[in-house]
Each structure stands twice: as structure tokens, then as C-alpha cells.
Image 1 (cartoon, rainbow over the protein chains, first blue to last red):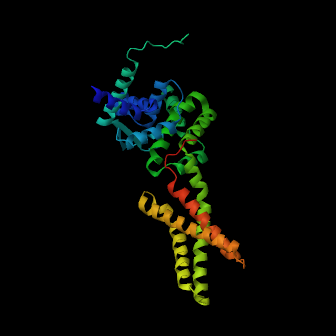
Image 2 (image 1 turned 90 degrees about the vertical axis):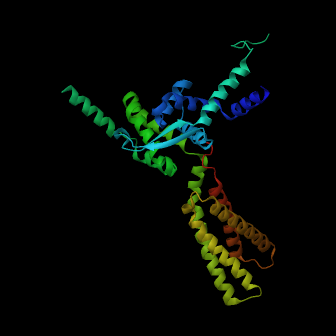
Image 3 (image 1 turned 60 degrees about the vertical axis):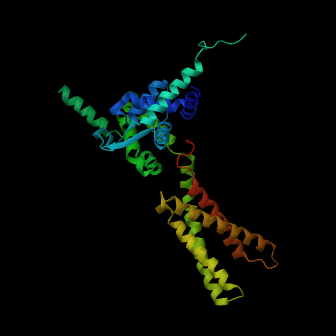
Length: 119
Length: 199
């Protein structure tokens, strides 16, 4: 139990909220998870405009951590035939996102939400 | 007829493109691995979403914002410093040749050691010019930076000595300053993070 809680904390420290949004976007897009779709998915999840640079930098970081894997496929005419890079979650990536969720739930357990100001 | 109009509309949308200079700037700063995929993503979003919804002007502003978000401060710095580094490297390489020739003509005491240093200056200057070809070769880049730092320290020591010497020699001051500058620029260009802080 203690060991498990320790592991959860370690992974939760590694995954920020933005990284989680990117990973969840890749997960929900499944076979269609390429750069533009992920950018739109993250914007929808966070309900705000997101800079492409932030998304691509996060994708690069997650790939270096081996949480995602990418491959390129041919592009469509609307993008002038330029290649598309598709992403998918790896088993360590799935584990990381699951543990991040578990860590959050564990942290909030027993605390009423939303918090009110203490008088 | 209606189908023809729709087809024409789609066609003209596909022809819409961000200003060439803007796309060129983005392509210049993107890593080779990302050049086609990221610019393709932005072009797709530009044509399918931004232009139809907001018009060309706002779409161009959107594209500029996204392009700037993809350029890191370090990439920008590296790009700005590249030309001065090339210029200084050419200068120190030429100065090395000149020093070596002069030392061997005059043959003052200890000239052999100074000839070796002059040859090192030339080799270092020429190797720095090959820096763009060393992408992804971390060990060679680190060796190049180490050599530049060592020569920079040597240059700083030479500058210090000449400022305290009874006989001032301007060429030593000039070459010493060039070596220090070359060392600093090489370190910044070699060790700048690939994904630094985004603008």
C-alpha cells in the first residue's frame, strides 16, 4: 500500500496538467491523433486557445520520456502533401496517465469540493 | 452548377496560403524532423479553419502567433550569432596562418610552441565553420566547444599580458579578443537547448 502510494506520487510529479491534456487528447483521437487534431483536442479540453509551440514541445518531451510513439504518413492536398506525424500512447504512457488520475483522486479523498474560504 | 461553385470554393481555399516570408521564417527555425509535419499541420488549420472562419487577415495574425510560439529564444539567439561566429572563425583561422608564418620567418626563442598554438587556432577556426554539419554529433560538438573555450582562455591570458607589457602590440590584443569572443559564441551556439523557453 505504502509502496503503491509512493509510485503514484512519483509519476504524478512527472506529469503536469498540460501533459495530461495532451495524453488524453491522443487517447481519445486514437488512430487520428496527429499534430493538428491533438492541438484542437487540447484546446477543447482546456477550453482556451493554445499555442502550437506548447503542444509540440510537450509532444517532444513525452516522446523522449517514452510515453508516446510517433510515425509519419503521407499528407493530404489541403496541406500541400506535407507529411502528417501520428502519435499513439505507449504502455508506460498509459500507466503514467492512469497513475496521475489515481494520484489526484487520492489527494482529494476526504476533502469536500469546491473549497470555501475559511472564516 | 452549385456543385461546381462548391468545388471552386474548395479549390480557392486550398490555394490560400500564409505569406511566403512568414512560412519561410517558420521553416527556417523548425528542426529538419518537424519541418514538413508541423508546417503541414499549421497550413491545414489555416486553410480549413482560420481563413473560412475569420478571413485572411486574422488567419495571418493567427499563423504569426503560432509560428512565434514555435521559435525558441535559444534558436533565435543561435541564428543571430551564427554570422558573427563565422566571421570571427575566418579571422582567427587566417590570423593563425599569419602567426605561424611570421613565427617561422623570425624564429624567436620558443617559436615552435607558438607555431603549434597558431596551427591550433587555424584548425579551430576551420572546424567551427563546419559546425552546421555536426548536427546530432554531440561528442564532436562538445570537443569543438572545449577547444574554443581553451583557446578563449588562452586569448584572455594574452590580452591580460599585453595590457601589462611595456611594449603594446595591437595585433595580440585584436587576436586575443577575437579568440575570447569565438569561445563565448561557440559555447552559446553549441550548447543552446533545442527546446528552450518558447517566445
